[in-house]
Amino acid sequence: MGKKNNAAEANATVENEKKNDNAVAEKETGDNMLEKVGKAAIKEHGLKEAFVTADGVVFRTENDAKNYALNLKNRSILNVKK
Image (cartoon, rainbow, N blue to C red; front, side):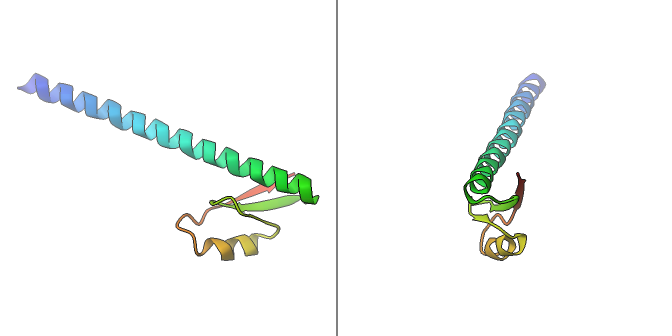
């Protein structure tokens, strides 16, 4: 019985590692997408920097982005510079 439990624990560990790797990859992909949105807004509007909320809305000022993000589940803001 001990060998079955060890195998099950090993499988569970591998699955958890895969989930963690996927979560990191999704975060990096999300940040990259938000950065692309910010860069596009900077280019289109001639800004030096932009503040992008987690849902992809772009603001000229950090304060406006923070106020908007208060209503979001994920309140993180990405500062994108030229």
